[in-house]
Amino acid sequence: MERAVGEYEVRGVDVGPETRCAHYDGDRDIIALRLGCCEVFYPCHRCHEAVAGHDSDPWPRERFDEPAVLCGGCATALSATAYLDADHTCPACGAAFNPGCRAHYDRYFEGL
Image 1 (cartoon, one colour):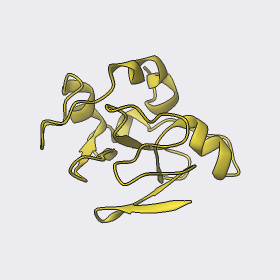
Image 2 (image 1 turned 120 degrees about the horizontal axis):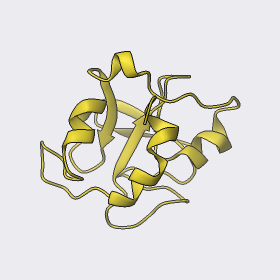
Image 3 (image 1 turned 180 degrees about the horizontal axis):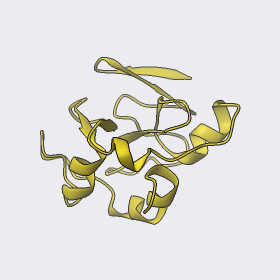
Image 4 (image 1 turned 90 degrees about the vertical axis):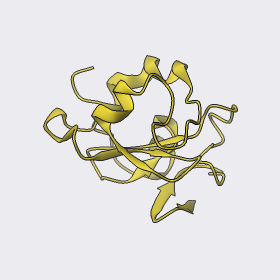
């Protein structure tokens, strides 16, 4: 399933308007992550596994200054660096991000 969030497409399972999905649908689960393997935004690694048809690769460290995280609250695309430095809050709109996502950083960001 695909859903437009701002100018971006987010792919996954039951993707909602703020990028929540069938796997993560809490109040703070409002980001989608771009993966290095296909450069497509997904709400989570499980969505990628379900719909991509290939193994995932994290966002490359040498591209941490490029848009890699999408805020589902305001549709702002953040660089990996901006997201990682944001203390679980969107710097554009102030929406709270799920701090539990930190447990999966190694799946999304190379070298973490």
